Image (cartoon, rainbow, N blue to C red; front, side, top):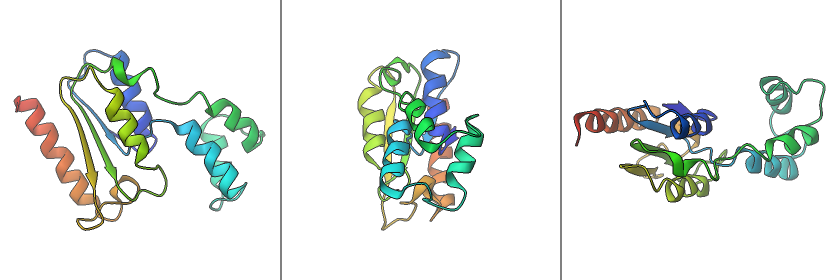
Length: 156
């Protein structure tokens, strides 16, 4: 189970590690590079305080510019990867996620053609959990994911 940027790493791990019993992308981060490029073009160097400083630090790009980082980040995507997932795969995503657009959840789902149980669960504004990783109703998403894992491991 991975949330936010973990929604990139978990599907990637599941594509190559065949011992996993299931994989959950809690926030589908299918094309992180595209998201970052869009953020830079739309919001410039200050989308939120310290955003780029933090991202550059996390990725080992300290001392570099956001533009230099985005050139690298263009390769941080799951195209050509997700179809290698062969375990049950859940994508849980908010319809109104303003960090990672819901279109990326659909991309992951559409490409996960070799998962024996692929599930796309979109959370709506009416039920809550529509924001990034369901922060507006975190327990609702957590309960759904826990039940999905329980059912998956039980074989249902």
